[in-house]
Length: 402
Image 1 (cartoon, rainbow, N blue to C red):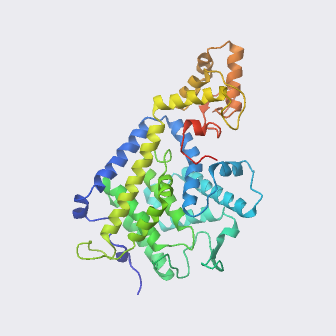
Image 2 (image 1 turned 30 degrees about the vertical axis):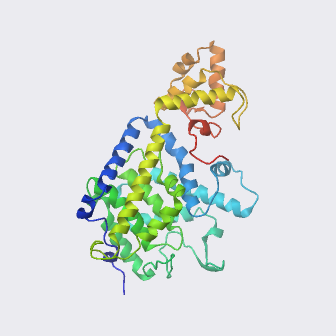
Image 3 (image 1 turned 180 degrees about the vertical axis):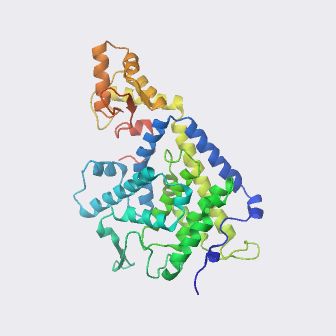
């Protein structure tokens, strides 16, 4: 029997169930925390953080799928420095593919109408897989034998099984995906329900398993983009995948729990378990709140200033890996000021050096050469940057130590 959109019901928990839960409050809290974080960041600083966090998002989202390529290995690949082992090199390229799709999404700036359409979801899959080595297109069974090959940007064409769950037949996917996009379009929901619908849609997309492979990463990229488009402007300075990866076992178990059929007359009125969906949404909201809270604490101005000062002190104590040579203490104030505004005027930077002009210009040249500041021209303001050697000092525990 063909699968219909009603087989995915409930689409979000019923109002009566939500009224007895903390889900609406948590959705509102997430929106407020995200808005507070974006309000404390200059636009250029937020944009720089988003580009930096693309590596972090790639690392954690791929980690959930078994690709443990570390951030320093991803950055090495960005420089063209690939591992000699072909298998590890392919995983580096897969990580770069994930980053390239994030860049493509930022450039597209899709709105919610664009996002929740079959064409966009297919294109998202295509943009990822055309950048992934073809060796990673091969689908293998539990014995390691090749059974199929991924086609970038195409719905799966054969039956699959995911754990105990049997997703809908391939023949049903085109119509089912069109109905999914219409049903879960965030424009159909208001207030806290909009965020709840995005979290619920994350599970329902995985339940359908529309692609032969890449469902998890495409689903997380879609959720990332939907949260941003729904008004969580600071999304990108923090990422959901970091929290999902840190609790990957729970993430996968709650995805499986939400696959369950309705258990009783007290478990909603749809085909699937309302309680399972609520537990999944609760987990997703808790994870998002934890991640935005974590980044907000890291970006708290007094604390960040202290960490920048510690970085400069560590440079002078020769404790910073990947770079040699001391820094003048006045560098800390220059870097902190550039962070606050996203950039700093050259004349202002020279003044903050509190050094004779020649020495001040030498310090600014050092900050540029070491990647701590950047410029778009010889006369442009100097922009705040996050070089790899400064990241552990600026943002401790953001990624595992290399």
